[in-house]
Amino acid sequence: MSNAHTISGQQFIGGQRRASGEAELVSLHADNGQPTGHRFFSASIVETAAAADAAAQAFTAYSQLSAERRADFLEAIAGQLDALDEEFFTFAMQETALPLARLTGERARTSGQMRLFATLLRRGDVHAVRIDSALPQRTPLPRPDLRQYRTALGPVAVFGASNFPLAFSTAGGDTAAALAAGCPVVFKAHGGHMITAELTAQAIERAREQQQIPAGVFNMIYGERIGAELVQHPAIQAVGFTGSLRGGRALFDLAMRRPHPIPVFAEMSSINPLIIMPQALAQRGQQIARDLVASFTLGCGQFCTKPGLIIGQRGEAFSQFIRELTERVNAAAPQPMLNAGTLAHYRSGLAALDQHQGIRHLAGDPEVRPHLAAPQLYQADSHLLLSGDPLLQEEVFGPVAIVVTVENHQQLTAALESLQGQLTATLLTDPDDLADAAPLAQLLTRKAGRVLFNGYPTGVEVCDAMVHGGPYPATSDARGTSVGTLAIERFLRPVCLQNYPAALLPPPLQDSNPLGLLRLVNGIYTRDPIHSPTSN
Image 1: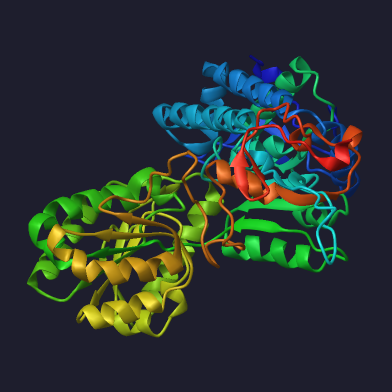
Image 2: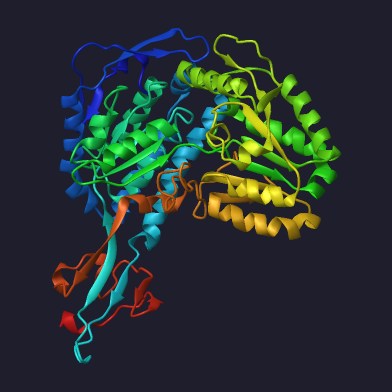
């Protein structure tokens, strides 16, 4: 494990460390704003271009490695992450104010998703092979031999998120998916946890050298003002981003204005509505209040799946529920946020709510404490939701929730129709609620990437079935996910080979099926080899 003096603050470019100018980026303690003692170099435009070029130079060799070799590389990264020791976590706790238990759990998730993508590669379905054999005797026109598979897009720019210094950062899900797809990565480190990023990048580089993977497959740069240059560099072919609506939309717009636009998967803003049905409220209102406050204050509310909008129907039960919420929020202790920028945005969001005539403050300590965020609860008039008021549509990142009371089921349906795209939507129900909940659930599948019954959305399982995405503004592309094995598809594209010489076919498309893949051959899924007239 690297000692503190090996933290250079330099860029990772093509297997080398580079820096120019002065080390002006200061790493700070999250809980008090004081310097940690380490400084970092902001990448110049030249260095940013060099990182993109290094990724481009590595692309051909890396994308042509077998799925087995890429799987070995991902597992080697996982092993290096698991070997990070106490010193690493000490730095990570300083930079994020997150407790050791949270960080060790997140490390396990980060190495686990590397291994999950390795499993996906070995399973083989990532190739998505489709073969339509030649029909030379077909009339009036013969059919050529057609073979489709998926191939890597090219170098990917990945932007680190503030709220997950491991799982959505240097070796996080976007990096894992891109590397699994065969795409080299240029990672822009988040300024809130630069030491953590550096030590993680060193772990990736150790795995790369161990596995003899080409230099330039992984690159990392620091700086707050080089994101635009990175996205506009012609070598970059896709972008992964997790952050604010403003930041994600800016990158998306830049990518669309390129001479050759590129896909951007930006996870941005979600209020994650939670609807409490009447019978569920009657049966377990107190428990729901307790669990709900625990959910939206978990990790100081710094989860993109935090349930930020709570909706219920008017009645004494819901009024009592709001009183329970109020008591629990008032009793909740302030917590440090990840960094000063996140705290400033949280306070700015609260100020906007405080100034709105249709929104009133229900609970939460109004006292401003340095480096701490107190949980807050607000109530908004239902007409604001029905009319699509912007303040009820855009996330306030932090431990705050807004309650809305609707008059009846009809108004509830209208309120949900007014919502923009979401990462999640939750229904809390009792068996007697299901008849009324069924059409709501169907409606919510149009609004969200994940619809939950009787749970809380802050837990995101890393698995094959997970969707962590959703219609705009939750993400810039509702067809993708940033969690789970489906995330790899963001960095792949289909290619069809027509009448290709048998000697030149890549292994997934060869007649003998040497990889043992499940392939769609002439409309039937099979692992059997095929005999093609064109191979003779």
